[in-house]
Length: 333
Image (tube, rainbow, N blue to C red; front, top):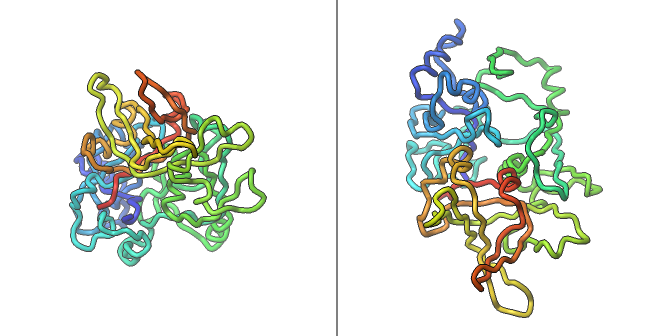
């Protein structure tokens, strides 16, 4: 996976002029902004989630800001607008060609544009599925607006400097993983990150909370054990001929129904097209591509359904709960 895009340049004239007004005498040019800063500028100065550009010097590859609206169900995040066609300049650390984030990042040119969790990690994963966030479930960390130490608080830009005392306190920060997005981000950043959870006596690697979709549990097997796993795997996305408002996500790994038969089914689920347009717009370019183009994450047990005498392996979750218990990434080439 390429380096995580933590900052990006807005490309709309209104946004650029707005940022120029924020410059101090010491600033020579505007800096790339965080996704949270982009959200605060939407829709007054930024009108579209696709109007961003790579933060790497000299690279003009387009970038998408997922969940740009403040009404979105997920945190705003920057991702490459195109993965199957690499539009970055040669050597850009954000190019999909790079598979190892740590080796891809040029630390001299992007000192703060790496993605990692520093401090303690605490997972709030428990048998109940992820729920809509509440005002109390906010992050204890500071979002950085640019590479020069500008933070964003309540939609305002606040210049700050660090002191030795600040750095010492930063080491004691506990990152609370409360949502599906938090857990997936941590897992994709470093599968070996140690995470505390109330159901374990000792910290566990974050990978212990994930499993390949073929190892996911059936709902009938969960009577005596807590359901703490997030299933993931390669998947494809397809339209439904008679239901344009929905899209089907189908995993590429098949699952054997039980130990007494060779019958295997491919797990799948339906999801709102509008939801994907708002939260994961970059993956819609892979509709009906034919081959697996996504890495899908879902937290729900299997359930076996039958329609017109045909068996389907789906997930036991309501359409409303599904919106808080899925996540997607486009496949790297």
